[in-house]
Length: 80
Image (spheres, rainbow, N blue to C red):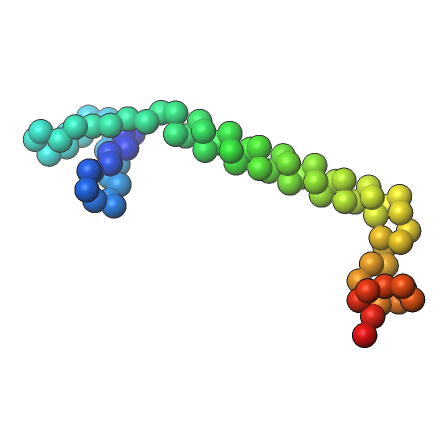
């Protein structure tokens, strides 16, 4: 699959192998884009999972964090 980007337009066009574009139209191929996007998405997911695991471990280790925001603590800033 080849990704075509027309200059001056906001339109993307995809051609499969063997298809021809308009006469004189250049075909641009950016194979690194998929690699970069995959790397960014994988990194984001891994960092999110690690962050959530750290929060879970912190809550299990510290009892004060288990009741944060419920208003049952006398020193809680969330009491009304």
